[in-house]
Image (tube, rainbow, N blue to C red; front, side, top):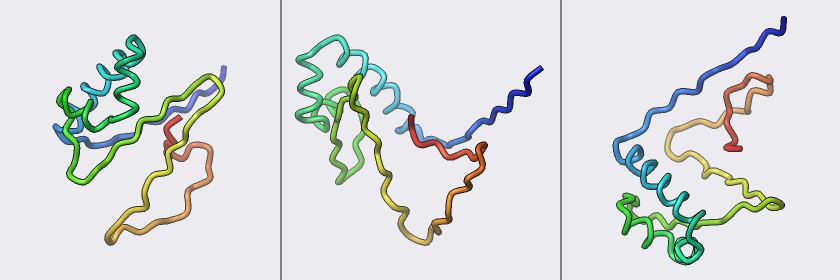
Length: 101
């Protein structure tokens, strides 16, 4: 019998973030089905997202890129600001860092 080890990562989301996730789900489905919409989303994501109820934080400019079968994008998060310290990542195989893919 094989032991299977799993973990759960807990995050807290604001009401706006939860609402934005719901909007994003609809955006992705529509972009998969409608090439014209996908192009508008790529050309001016802030306008398209705003029109659909996505709450965009002041001063934030979104950029949409599309993964393909032979090209994947990895987003490098911005460094923390303020008094947040940055520590080396735990290299154990069960570390809960999620790179997003």
